[in-house]
Image (tube, rainbow, N blue to C red; front, side, top):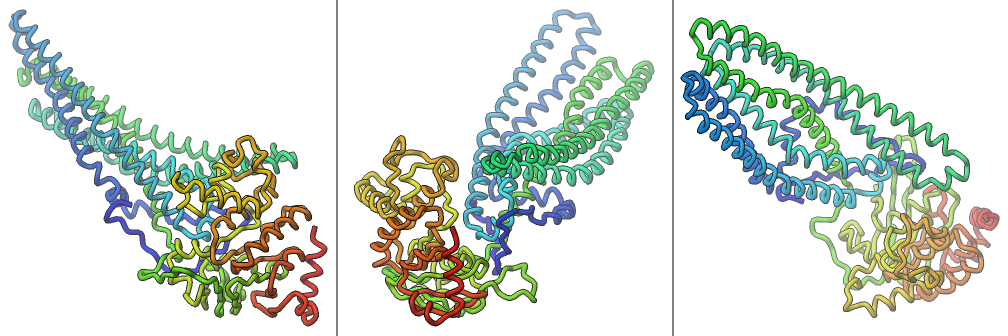
Length: 623
């Protein structure tokens, strides 16, 4: 992150996750963005753009010199018309023509220098913005990602950063230079004839009025368009990831109709943008033409009255023609600037997002944790829960001794998955504490905490990388060639424990690249690789959220046999949805309505707790 850039952090409870749908976060505050002002908004990227400013300023200088050279050409033409052409001195025509040619070549050189100076620095700014955004997305808690559609984040990281880069490399340079060129050009026009210059100046007033009206209208429409593009990207992503479901249920047409409606909404917004741009272009084209006509009438009259020479009149209109492009360009440069302001607003919506789960200022250290895991009055509730709704976890007291395997059982909705998520601070407790070897896990850095505690989830997610890279994800220190043998040993052991022998039958063995999210593998294969990933991390505490649900009975039995070797020396908290998983545990904790109501061995709880017997019987009837 560039120096000087700071992102505020606040301690708020995480928002309630929604697993079935990710509604667009409330971004209605963008309607008030014009109150902040375009310049103040754009200045927010100054920490990122500062390294590129010298090149951008030099690019502006080169562009300004090119514009001044262009404005100098009418001066040569005035001398040519009032001198050699008026006196019919042919010997002086060629030097004037060569002077115009030289000025044209010099202008082209300055334009080439401008492009060379600004293009590369703009890509560096884009990369810095994109890297910072990605790092921020990695840092933000799970609650944030539960709320935000992935397509919205994708459009911000790709489209918006690219738009900012184009504006820095092209929009801001030409906008500043063209405005300066217009001012200088108007000064030249006034020098030749104050009356004709005044006509041009008065005709420009409607342009400024139209420009202010355009900004107010276009900024709102541009924001809506960019948000709709993010929604459309989300729809594409969801349909691609869910293509098997759509095909299996024959819902391709339904998905297409839904996508078409969203695309039509975006199309309507783009047409509204086009109408706004067409409106400003009407003024940008009409006003100069009217000014030309008025100046032509006035210029002919002044020339006939000997108040203006033919050369001056010719040069006046040549200068006005040169100024036409800078004046006309203000329209699309202004719309580009407003699009960029919207992109910056959208980008900083993510960068400014509060992160309640942060590292402590003075973290504690655990050099050799024994694996004692304790829940000390741990409470949790979602940020948006009404006061009348009880906490999801209501004062959890539970102690896991080093090397002990604790099974966690309970009915659906009792809070098992939420409880496991607290161990690695995917969510933070809203009361009480979770401790590792007596140290509050909030006093550890997240990196250290997640090095000591590893998780395997029921919904196994793999990355588009090799099997080897997926399994050794939690062991980055083994990435070097000098530790290849050790990495091979860890990989082989993890695959053996997880009964992932299918890896050897893959086309390239453990070097085989799995598809996006591992969807090229079966559910059971993904779960075994995810389990191998957790085992390979060799943590002090292993948290397993029913990682064997997709396995058949025989494979599950073999995996459990391998897990016994690991769990003999590792503290484990295992969410059990099958009676066979309970058999792995030394003790069982019964979770009921957000509370631990009983702890004991499987046989003890069967004999003494009616609710436990009910829960176990419900597990036994599950497929």
